Structures are given as structure tokens and as C-alpha cells.
Image 1 (spheres, rainbow, N blue to C red):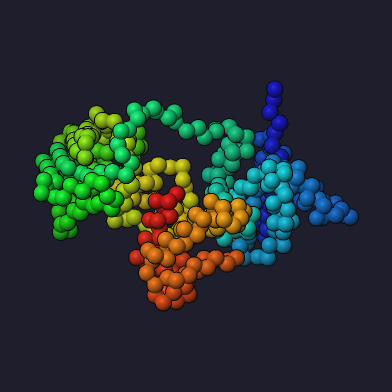
Image 2: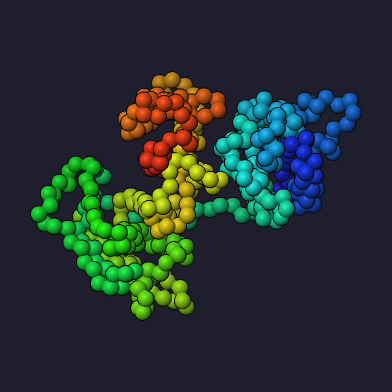
Amino acid sequence: MTKKPPVVYISYCRSSAEDTAFAKQLAERLRGDGVRSLLDVWELRPGMDIVKWYAYALFESDVAILLASRNVIKNDFRQHAGLDDLMELQEVSVERALIRLIPLLFPGVLTQYLPKPFKGRFGIKIEPQNPELGYEELLDALLERKPRIAPTLRERNPSSRDPLQSVFLKRLTLSNFRRAQQLELVRSEAAPDRTSGPGQWTILLGDNGTGKSSVLWAIGMGLLDRDLVQAILPSISSPLIQFGHSECSVQVTETSTTYHVQLTKQQGREAIAASSASPDFMIFGYGTSRGSAFGGPQRSVELDRPLNAINTLYAIPTNLVHAETWIEGLERNALKAGEATESDQLFQNVCDVLKSVLPGIDEIVLDEERIRFIGPSVGDCTIDSLSDGYATTLGWMAQLNT
């Protein structure tokens, strides 16, 4: 049976001649690829009820696309084709017509500044001067040509480890890893063996340039899942195998098990030669470029990429969860679920923890525009006015809780 082609409604800034021309070009190309595109300049006729036509278009469509240019942010929403009606009909259209909302993000446009129905939604970047960069991705999404399928989950032997038991690093052995030709670090037997309580730390101290980051990199390589190590190797800018050698090795011994990885050079590239099974505890890695709670246009919520948990450790540019989007999502779920629900309690708990972790903040206020922090240490400010220390702490918390 041939699958019915999707119907797409395109919303754009009518006051912009450039946006109007691009909307026509996109709609024509989609139709040429088998996607029925509804555009007001083709459908509306003198005497027709505009609002009724927009309502028909929305309920007829499977997907609503917003051409998210800078004009969308600068101009009145009512200058956008059907956008005001989309805002009014969003709840009905989403719940009853199962319509999907996809923003096409023009350069420099952030999802958190888009009109409410599209705000914070995962979008597709597109370049009007070179639409090929985003068009195929859009077509894949509309026609479901390349469904995202997670890798097969590998079964793991049930762990006998107490989930509340602390994990201690006992020994680290490096061979030809970065600047360390041979290195062995052993945890002192005189250290108190307090394995029953949370909050235990192993602290590594040293002057700049003595190899602290190399030690952290090695621990990550030794403990991470083999697939993650293989995925991250091409993105690391500096070689892991010491100059003049063809392979390196890392051994990490924790409370009860030893893990290892061996890297080798293959056709000029570093690859895994051997590795052990990954551990049964969670691993997060933050390096000197760990980021904070806010930033540039790439700061979006990305929860489907395990590399995000350790990318910054290896100086690979990445972004922590956008904290403002995260908090707004918690509030939205709480409002939808109602008072005294699990979602409401979670939101309240997060706000209480934030106030306790960030000294001098007594109140967190969410209005229609922004999240504001109020207290003697910050006055009354938005999230992007917080100090680097506060923003970094907030970024960590959002990342760890998602």
C-alpha cells in the first residue's frame, strides 16, 4: 500500500518580501518532491473568510512549518501568515489533529525567542542563500525516509553492586598516553575506606602543565563504553598516543574491578585495539571548557546524545542543557498536571534545590517572558545576567537532572 503523502502548512512573515519569496520557493519544491504544501498566497481568494481558511489549513495538515527568520522575532506576530491563528488553535490542533510543529531556523535565530507554539521545539537549520543545507533533512523528516533507530541494547549481567555504594578509584596505570610515558597512581591505603556514605571525592592537585587533564582523560577512556570511545576519538584535536609510539594503554582499577583500553594507530588515525566491558555505574566528565547555563545559538536541549555527558572533558565544543528551557519545561509539565502531582512536586523540589545551592537567591520567578532570580546576592536578574560561577553551577544541575 502506498503511504499517503504528508500535508504541510507553511507559516512565514508576510511583511517580508524575501520571506514570502522563500516560502513560495520551498512550497513549490516540496510539491515537486511529493509533499502537498498549503500556502495562503495560492489558496486564498477574494471574499474568503481568512480565519476559517487558516483553521482549515491547520486541521488539514500533518505538519506546520514556521520559516523562523529574524523578521519572525522583530515583527508583530499578526504579520505572519496564520501565525496568530496557529497560536490560538495550537492546543486543539496538537491534541486533536496530531499536528507536528517544525521551525526552520534561519542563521542567528534561537528557538527560545520564537512565538509560543514553536518556542523551544527542535528545529532544522536552513540557509536561505543555500537551502540545500537543510532541505534534505526536512524532507527526511516529512517523508520519514531515515527514521532514527537507536542501536540494539546490549544485555548486561545483573550487577550485585549496591547502588548507594560509593565508587573509589584505587589505581591508574598509563603507558605512552599523551605526555605520560609511564605513570602509576595508587590510592593510599591509609585513606579512610568510607564506602557506605554518599559524597565521597578523589581530589587531584597539581600545578598547571603537570598532566591533571591527561589523568582525567585517561580515566574517561578506561571507563567509557567501547562505542563511546570509538565515537569520540575522531573529534579529539590532540593525539592520545605519545609522539614516537604506535600504541598506548590505560588501566583503571576501581573498588572491585579493573578496566582497560588500548589504542593503536591505523592509517594515521587512532583506534581501539582492545578494551574491557564498561562499568555498571554512571559516568559524567566535565573539562575546563565545561560551559554554563546559557550561551550561543547551539544551546538547546539535546537528551539523545550520550556523548554530551563527556564531550567537554576532551575539549570538544558542545553545550550543556539550556537551563532556562529546562526549567520552563518543568513548569509547563507541572501546570499541565496540576497541584499536588508528581510533576508539580518535581518542579517545586528543583526550585528549592536551586535556591539552596545558589547562595543569596531567595526567589525564582517565571513570568511569560523570562525566568528571574531574586535575592540579596543578585538583585532581580534574568538567567543570562548571572555570574559565571552561578551559571556554571546551574548548567551542571540541569545537565545532571536530565
